[in-house]
Amino acid sequence: MTALAPPAVSSAQTSRSAPAAGGHGRVWWMVLPALIMFAGFGIIPLLGVLGLSFTTWDTLGVIKPSGFDSWHQVLTDPGLPHALWVTFEIMALSWLFQTPVSILIGVFLAGNQRYREFLAVLYFIPLLLSAAAIAITYKALLDPNFGLGAGLGLGILQQNWLGESGLALATVVFVVSWQFIPFHSLIYQGAVRQIPVSMYEAAQLDGAGRVRQFFSITLPQIKYTIILSSTLMVVGSLTFFDLIFVLTEGGPSDATRSLALDMYKTGFQANLMGPACAIATILVVIGLLLALLLRRLGGRGDESQLEGA
Image 1: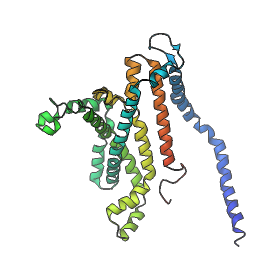
Image 2 (image 1 turned 90 degrees about the vertical axis):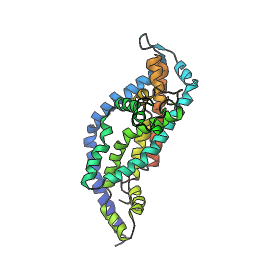
Image 3 (image 1 turned 30 degrees about the vertical axis):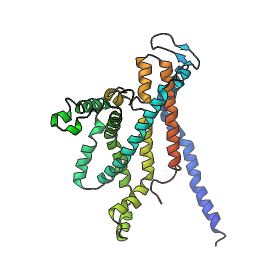
Image 4 (image 1 turned 180 degrees about the vertical axis):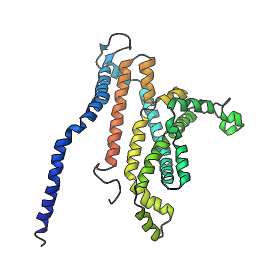
């Protein structure tokens, strides 16, 4: 019996894999619309940006090939390391702030109580607002002379939030987190609801409290969601531009001048499209490397979302 068992399993696998291979052959054309959209709105513009990085163009005159002049100008600019540092500072601090808060809110909202559904609607309101509107509102609220602190007479809020380097960076991180925490909470809420209730029931029978269940069941079961959310946070933080531009314009003393803002100012205020495209290419490369690193940390893509499933 033992000797005959392996061929039976192999035959079953063959019978299951054959229709799957045939199915792939029949439906491969279904990916064509997505490929066409990705090529038209992703690959071709990216190649155009890469090509412009080897030219000289002021957005009005003729585009002139200039070899590596734009790249040499960008790579020897002393402002590039500073912009990179500010970008990574905002990325790291916003990730450290957003991730635990988003997980806790997502776990809280995953409950079935009615009042949690009402609170969920309130939490997700920032998702409906534009970054420019949020920045203008916070800029008015944080004004040391006419803002919220002056109106309420609270000295602790009457700080020069956007006029001092450390406070300005912390304010940018807070406002960015305030805008995007609801989005990541929504992701975690969905992930927590996918965890089988039987796991929590078994833990309760073993005497585990809520804190122990959170660290022993919830966090391990949503580890792939954490990787997904972290990828969105990290790669998305490279493109923060509109909110920082309206809030601080990169100041004070370039304390919040991120790489995306540096790209905008180089291209559309200094009219140097060649160097601006070189900075854009650097942003794309950094984003790809970070996404690949996080994907590697997340393991293989064919693994189940739930640990042990």
